[in-house]
Image (cartoon, rainbow, N blue to C red; front, side, top):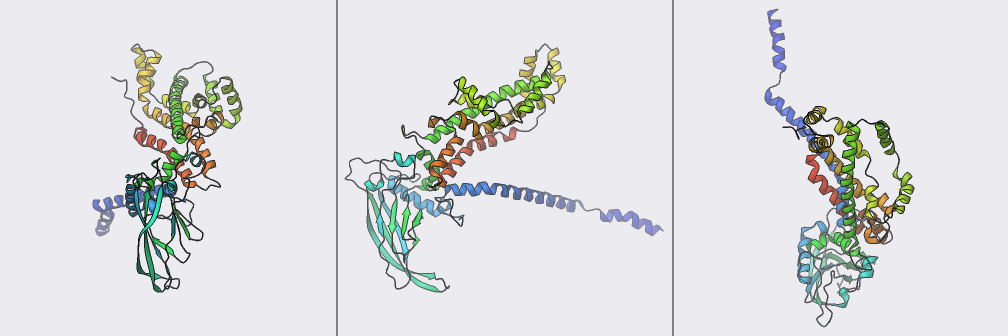
Amino acid sequence: MMARKTAAHASPSRCRLPASALRRRQLAASAWLYLTFLAVATIMAGTFVLAFMASLKVDPLERPFRFYFDQLNPAAWIAAARLGQEGAGDALWGGFSPGAKIAFGVTYAAPADTTIVEPKAEIPRRRPGSGIAAALMRDYAADYASIALKSSSSETMQVRDERGIWQAWPTRTFVYEITYRPDRQNRPRIERTPLNLTAPPSQTLIDSPISPSRSERRGRLLSWDNITPGALGLIFNNYRRVINETADLQTGKSLFGSWLVNSLAIATGRLLLTLVVASLAGYALARLKFRGSRLLFAALIFSMTIPAQVTFVSNYLIFRDLSLLNTPWSVIVVFVASANVLLMKQFFEGFPREIEEAAIVDGANRFQVFWKIVLPNAKPALLVNAILAFQGAWNDFFWPLVLITSPPEALTVQVGLLSLRRSFGGAQGDWGLVLAGAFLSVVPVLILFVLFQRHIVPTQFTKGIT
């Protein structure tokens, strides 16, 4: 009996884990939880990352989708920087300017017993895009450039054929020199230098400083949109095109820059107006008891259930009669009293009444209590409202489309993206530029969230207490 009791008393101590083993289990559980969250975040961000990579490509719709291309290749960056330096003395953004001498080498390979001939090289008279950019272009590199074969050299290389057998293929490297003609009177700096190379179908391009932009005629014609891009010009060519090629036909001014400024002004205006209206209305509904307050709050809740498309005709007529159409004020004031008021009301209802009553006993009136005590403690709610209002105004598409229709530079960035899709997407197929414009429109919201996310946390009510 004594032995059985001793064993019973000893069993809990034998089952108890050491502190080190328990700590290891806790660390393992934390590690698995962290890896789970990391995997979920990676999956959710995967689409965003792929879209950003596609926005850097010349052809974002290519199949299969390549994850390694010139815009992500450091060797291509170095080559592009050299070509940009030779073309315009600018290794970052490149170009083609007076005095330029550019050495561009390409290597072709062909099956054994095949003579590799020199490809036909030309600087085409090519416009940098379509639509507005094509109409605004006045200077072409073809009018100022001359191209000549500088040197050529032959070698052999081992190539695996379709049957998996290694064979010795001859290769030949051609180095072309592109110069800016000194005999021209008007000598502008040109942004890009296109190049076309035409070779027999038996010859295959195996090496070049930067990859060709497209291949046509079953590989016979290889085309480069710009052989002097510079490092940043190669990587962010689509983003540069968004700024330069979306221009007004009359003034030549960048429309995309104007769209960004308009959206920023509208978003900032709505943010400020929303904070004023939401804080005042929310505090009044939370603290002031007056006849019809419940009916007013019910009407506010009911208005949140009505889609904007139901009331846009009446709102449009009101703004027309007030002469506010095609002005940013119509978009600013159209959507300020909404869920923001409800959020502020709920926050103010949770604020301790004792603090307000103590301030009133000390002689403060209702507005002083609101301004000096309640509002300083409402920083988290105000920041949440500010971010929601800014994001809602920045991403708003419907109301700017209805209320602002002209002139082109008065549009917002979201409506401007629609015009980009019509001008460069569709039949034109220039989706890289459209994707770049979409990503530029996301940047301000990301910056706002990164700057203020650490402030969106509950805080103790300490302001105004002495």
